[in-house]
Image 1 (tube, rainbow, N blue to C red):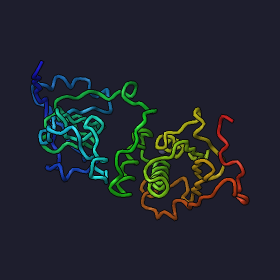
Image 2: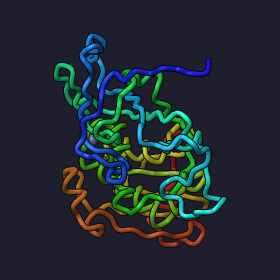
Image 3: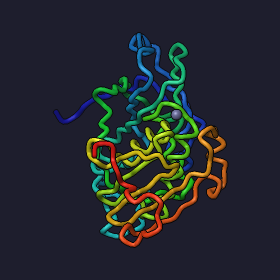
Image 4: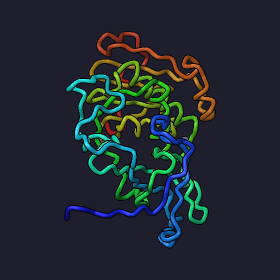
Length: 287
Ligand SMILES: [Zn+2]
């Protein structure tokens, strides 16, 4: 089997015409399915999300090693195999994107964001299944660094919404805390053994922190307390986010607020903590 023939089943309609203009996280777009294939859309409304496979017709096909976006080392050390990254450059330039369906209008599917440029041939679509496709315990070491703190926050907001299902103040608060910790404290790589303790009264914050830091009660990496603060514990080090913003604030309010109106941050070593109010800040739910 030396050659495989693939026929496009549709085409991407996007406001972005050039790859260089495409934001990493994509933009709202339309998938136009060709007439010959529209019968294949029957009962697609049973699903909220979709895998879209596209033929990245402008991509190079001649490389097996690339320097991914966000990797600073442009030499040998920065090179990654194409099967270890999601670069469009690969022997068969098939793009894969999970999208939320906004509306199905006849043969046109409106999606929330897609990173394929206008005119990209679509070669297949399949429903995204929570049961088969979502692996919450997945391990991904970061490949590069985000282009900016704003870009890091934007990516966290999407990741959080994919888990939590609504854009609320608690979600925005969690994203701001995680973004601060990764950018300012952890150089975009969560330290191994990181534990998180959250205020028990803030349910949306709890949900989102567990998702973004990938921590849980069962593994002893997550706990609750009755203080209005988020504590990150790594070894003896304690990073404390005392929450200033009231729980009633909206998604937009939390994102627009200055950092000092969202939380007050300080850190200390547990062994020298003398005056800390809570002598056991890491008490977890299953102790
Ligand atoms: Zn919520």
